[in-house]
Image (tube, rainbow over all chains, first blue to last red):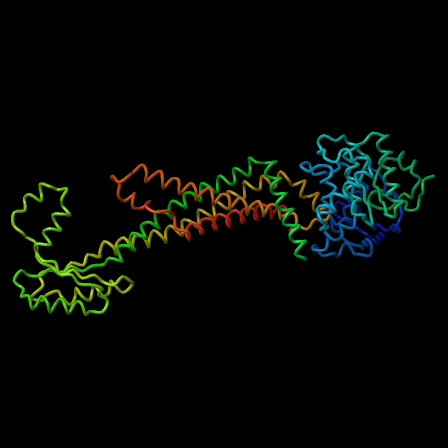
Length: 223
Length: 301
């Protein structure tokens, strides 16, 4: 699903975010991306989502060369990737249902189909009773579950999550991870960037460790 | 893209634009208010120009040359001149006005100036041939040719073809149109800038939302759509409100003036803005508003 070869990302001023990164994530895998703050986790995810362009190297996502993708093709790439952020990134003037449905709206589905599938996605994360609530009245855990519903409603090939439990208490973090495991069990490749070692320990999945912009360990499956 | 899909998109753009209005009415009202004020002023100027233009058209349609005859002219010579003028190409009609009729007309015209009329004890007015020219672009040329052909003839005392004032007003109008057009371009460019700045506030307030939309796979055109639809609707609404304001102002002014003084102002607001000018004001409103929305959103998406 993901192939990264000799990936480098340099920022102006000589700051190196990623240096000669090589890694692979197979289709259907659940992988943690970990490392200390500033190790390059978020930069790698931003490159996979084509929010940033690599300075050099090759990045293949589902067979597409992300680095060489023309700007007009980027929305198409992003529609095949679900994404969950630490700060949820919900649209404040839309209800939970409309936030989830927006992805389907972008994909061109009819309004009835959008609402039907968005409702099912909310049901999947146990939030169907909060469908008409706006993000401002939802708790952090509820907002993150809405964000997860939005990420999976389009049945993406790949789910990227950047510190998805960073703003949640430990019990909620476990609940969110349970949802990711269910999503992964349905065939979606899941990549979760986190520095929460307890969570990684509990989940028992392959972990790629980044340190100072380079892969320190790509094979470790925490026991 | 399929028609159904396009309609689905358009429906979403309209819904989202309406939603945006509900959430930030202040900024949008400010933008529309700016446009309404500008279009209202432009509409007033167009109203005055259109009315003056129509009045000039009326004047052009009644172009006359007054050929004043000497008292001593023989009836046969007068009849020859009458026939000569009648046969001249571009002449619609020739009327002989004898001295008594001229005095009667003068008395009727000057009836308000009673003292002046009473002082007239003998008839000082000459007989005349009143030549009405066929209305149209060639009328002035025909009038000039008639004047040139009659001046100096023995049976003619004087020829009046007072078109100078018309020429002067037309020249002034031409300058007003040219200057007004140039000024309108500058003003509307400024309004596009002001509106774009105001709308940019709305776009800025939604920058996170725009970022999220792009991250979940929306194309830039999909994100821009609601802003452009809002711009289109705002332009249309502003145009209608401004035109209603112009008509209300016109009616208020004519009601206030009545049939009394300030004849020039009355003349300038006598009739409503013609449909063509109203359509132009509306179209400019839509164009300005759409351009402002486009420039406002272009930086962010």
